Image (cartoon, rainbow, N blue to C red; front, side, top):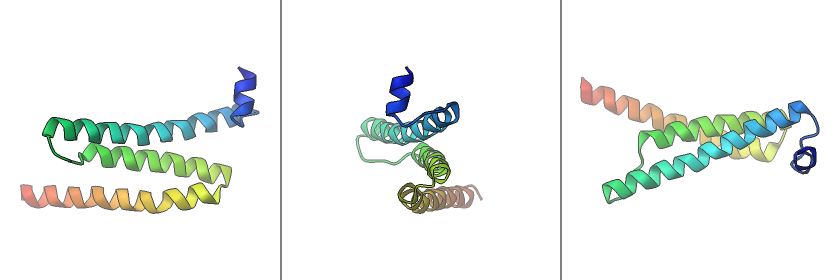
Amino acid sequence: MHTIMSLLGAETANDALWLAVGLAGQLMFTARFLVQWIASERSGRSVVPVAFWYLSIAGGLIVLAYGIHKRDAVIILGQLPGVVIYGRNLWLISKSRAQDAG
């Protein structure tokens, strides 16, 4: 087990924890596409459910935190714009629902 962790770049328990955090964020990105695919198949057309945006922002924030911890500019610069866009989409959805209700 220690050898596998070393291959993944985790030499300490703290490294292993952050590796798990990063992987959890990546799994959320995978889950968002599965959610979108299932919703589209059920609908018979391409749809983007609200859960897609929640999984996107959660996954983006987690991977961003991982990138900040690792001080990895590629991850930080890759995730930061997405987090802003995901948040904006959620805000627009919330605004639209409030207008529809009122």
